[in-house]
Image 1 (cartoon, rainbow, N blue to C red):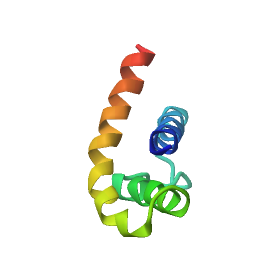
Image 2 (cartoon, rainbow, N blue to C red; image 1 turned 45 degrees about the horizontal axis):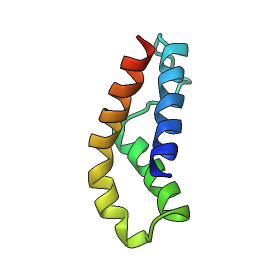
Image 3 (tube, helix red, strand yellow; image 1 turned 90 degrees about the horizontal axis):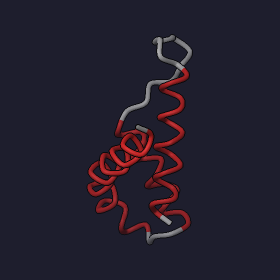
Image 4 (cartoon, rainbow, N blue to C red; image 1 turned 180 degrees about the vertical axis):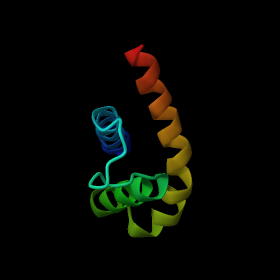
Length: 76
């Protein structure tokens, strides 16, 4: 389930980045901290105990990089 939540978030961000290739003032800035916070909030709400939040925040950046690499290599 964590993979599904993370995959959806990363795929959505990838499409948004391709759609908005030019920096625009009305396009929200997307950074790793906001991504991990969003995924952690959703995951701890539905999947995991809230006490796992700090560990999940530490784990997610590496996991996101791994999934982003898989998405990029699949697309090429």
